[in-house]
Length: 155
Image (cartoon, rainbow, N blue to C red; front, top):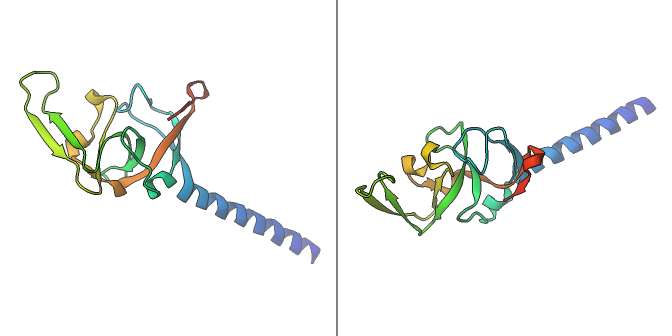
Protein backbone atom coordinates (compact mmCIF):
# COMPACT_ATOMS: atom_id res chain seq x y z
CA UNK A 1 0.00 0.00 0.00
CA UNK A 2 2.87 2.37 0.77
CA UNK A 3 4.29 2.03 -2.78
CA UNK A 4 0.91 2.88 -4.33
CA UNK A 5 0.62 5.96 -2.06
CA UNK A 6 4.08 7.16 -3.08
CA UNK A 7 3.31 6.69 -6.80
CA UNK A 8 -0.04 8.47 -6.41
CA UNK A 9 1.66 11.33 -4.54
CA UNK A 10 4.33 11.73 -7.25
CA UNK A 11 1.67 11.55 -10.00
CA UNK A 12 -0.38 14.26 -8.27
CA UNK A 13 2.71 16.47 -8.05
CA UNK A 14 3.50 15.97 -11.76
CA UNK A 15 -0.11 16.73 -12.75
CA UNK A 16 -0.16 19.83 -10.52
CA UNK A 17 3.09 21.17 -11.98
CA UNK A 18 1.89 20.40 -15.50
CA UNK A 19 -1.40 22.25 -14.94
CA UNK A 20 0.42 25.23 -13.44
CA UNK A 21 2.85 25.41 -16.38
CA UNK A 22 0.01 25.06 -18.88
CA UNK A 23 -1.89 27.96 -17.28
CA UNK A 24 1.27 30.08 -17.10
CA UNK A 25 2.15 29.61 -20.78
CA UNK A 26 -1.47 29.86 -21.95
CA UNK A 27 -2.53 32.99 -20.06
CA UNK A 28 0.48 34.85 -18.60
CA UNK A 29 3.67 34.54 -20.65
CA UNK A 30 5.14 32.61 -23.53
CA UNK A 31 8.31 32.10 -25.53
CA UNK A 32 8.24 32.77 -29.29
CA UNK A 33 10.92 32.05 -31.89
CA UNK A 34 11.13 34.94 -34.35
CA UNK A 35 11.47 34.03 -38.02
CA UNK A 36 11.87 36.20 -41.09
CA UNK A 37 13.49 39.54 -41.82
CA UNK A 38 10.57 41.94 -41.35
CA UNK A 39 11.73 43.20 -37.93
CA UNK A 40 15.43 43.66 -38.74
CA UNK A 41 17.55 45.23 -37.33
CA UNK A 42 15.57 45.13 -34.05
CA UNK A 43 14.96 41.37 -34.22
CA UNK A 44 16.48 38.71 -36.44
CA UNK A 45 15.50 35.19 -37.39
CA UNK A 46 15.88 32.62 -34.62
CA UNK A 47 15.77 35.19 -31.81
CA UNK A 48 13.84 33.76 -28.87
CA UNK A 49 11.45 36.28 -27.35
CA UNK A 50 9.75 36.42 -23.95
CA UNK A 51 6.19 37.64 -24.44
CA UNK A 52 3.62 38.98 -21.97
CA UNK A 53 0.12 37.63 -22.71
CA UNK A 54 -1.49 39.67 -19.91
CA UNK A 55 -0.65 42.98 -21.62
CA UNK A 56 -3.23 42.38 -24.34
CA UNK A 57 -5.89 41.18 -21.89
CA UNK A 58 -5.35 44.23 -19.65
CA UNK A 59 -5.33 46.72 -22.57
CA UNK A 60 -1.68 47.58 -21.99
CA UNK A 61 -0.76 47.49 -25.69
CA UNK A 62 0.28 50.86 -27.08
CA UNK A 63 2.01 52.57 -29.98
CA UNK A 64 5.63 51.40 -30.57
CA UNK A 65 5.14 48.07 -28.75
CA UNK A 66 6.38 44.98 -30.57
CA UNK A 67 3.60 42.40 -30.59
CA UNK A 68 2.84 38.85 -31.64
CA UNK A 69 -0.43 38.64 -33.57
CA UNK A 70 -2.44 36.19 -35.61
CA UNK A 71 -1.82 36.86 -39.30
CA UNK A 72 -5.01 38.54 -40.60
CA UNK A 73 -4.87 36.67 -43.93
CA UNK A 74 -3.39 33.33 -42.77
CA UNK A 75 -4.94 32.64 -39.35
CA UNK A 76 -2.74 29.59 -38.71
CA UNK A 77 0.36 31.83 -38.74
CA UNK A 78 1.68 34.27 -36.18
CA UNK A 79 3.45 37.52 -37.05
CA UNK A 80 5.79 39.78 -35.11
CA UNK A 81 5.33 43.49 -35.85
CA UNK A 82 5.46 46.93 -34.25
CA UNK A 83 2.29 48.88 -33.48
CA UNK A 84 2.42 52.12 -35.46
CA UNK A 85 -1.08 53.39 -34.83
CA UNK A 86 -3.88 52.78 -32.32
CA UNK A 87 -7.60 53.47 -32.37
CA UNK A 88 -8.30 57.06 -33.45
CA UNK A 89 -4.78 57.69 -34.81
CA UNK A 90 -4.25 59.05 -38.31
CA UNK A 91 -1.86 57.17 -40.60
CA UNK A 92 -0.53 58.98 -43.66
CA UNK A 93 0.62 56.46 -46.22
CA UNK A 94 2.39 57.09 -49.51
CA UNK A 95 1.99 54.59 -52.34
CA UNK A 96 5.70 54.85 -53.04
CA UNK A 97 7.93 56.22 -50.29
CA UNK A 98 10.85 56.70 -52.73
CA UNK A 99 9.39 59.47 -54.90
CA UNK A 100 7.97 62.93 -54.34
CA UNK A 101 5.14 62.20 -56.81
CA UNK A 102 3.61 59.40 -54.76
CA UNK A 103 -0.09 59.44 -53.98
CA UNK A 104 -0.88 60.08 -50.32
CA UNK A 105 -3.63 58.26 -48.47
CA UNK A 106 -4.91 59.20 -45.01
CA UNK A 107 -6.29 56.41 -42.83
CA UNK A 108 -8.05 56.86 -39.49
CA UNK A 109 -7.67 53.79 -37.28
CA UNK A 110 -11.11 52.44 -36.39
CA UNK A 111 -12.27 51.58 -32.88
CA UNK A 112 -10.91 48.20 -31.80
CA UNK A 113 -8.19 48.19 -34.48
CA UNK A 114 -4.52 49.02 -34.84
CA UNK A 115 -1.91 49.54 -37.57
CA UNK A 116 1.16 47.28 -37.52
CA UNK A 117 4.37 47.39 -39.55
CA UNK A 118 7.71 45.63 -39.59
CA UNK A 119 10.83 47.65 -38.80
CA UNK A 120 12.35 46.48 -42.11
CA UNK A 121 9.80 48.32 -44.26
CA UNK A 122 11.27 47.15 -47.56
CA UNK A 123 10.87 43.50 -46.58
CA UNK A 124 7.67 43.39 -44.53
CA UNK A 125 4.11 42.37 -45.32
CA UNK A 126 2.03 44.35 -42.85
CA UNK A 127 -0.86 46.81 -42.53
CA UNK A 128 0.38 48.62 -45.62
CA UNK A 129 -0.70 45.45 -47.48
CA UNK A 130 -3.72 44.17 -45.55
CA UNK A 131 -4.89 47.29 -43.72
CA UNK A 132 -5.62 47.85 -40.06
CA UNK A 133 -6.15 44.74 -37.96
CA UNK A 134 -8.50 44.02 -35.06
CA UNK A 135 -6.80 44.38 -31.67
CA UNK A 136 -8.26 40.95 -30.87
CA UNK A 137 -5.68 39.38 -33.21
CA UNK A 138 -2.87 40.51 -30.89
CA UNK A 139 -1.82 37.60 -28.69
CA UNK A 140 1.05 39.07 -26.69
CA UNK A 141 3.53 41.90 -26.24
CA UNK A 142 7.26 41.23 -26.66
CA UNK A 143 9.01 41.95 -23.36
CA UNK A 144 12.57 40.80 -24.07
CA UNK A 145 14.87 39.08 -26.51
CA UNK A 146 16.37 36.29 -24.41
CA UNK A 147 18.35 34.41 -27.06
CA UNK A 148 21.06 34.65 -28.11
CA UNK A 149 22.26 35.66 -24.67
CA UNK A 150 24.84 38.03 -26.14
CA UNK A 151 21.96 40.05 -27.63
CA UNK A 152 19.68 40.07 -24.55
CA UNK A 153 17.48 43.16 -24.58
CA UNK A 154 14.38 44.40 -22.74
CA UNK A 155 11.70 46.15 -24.82
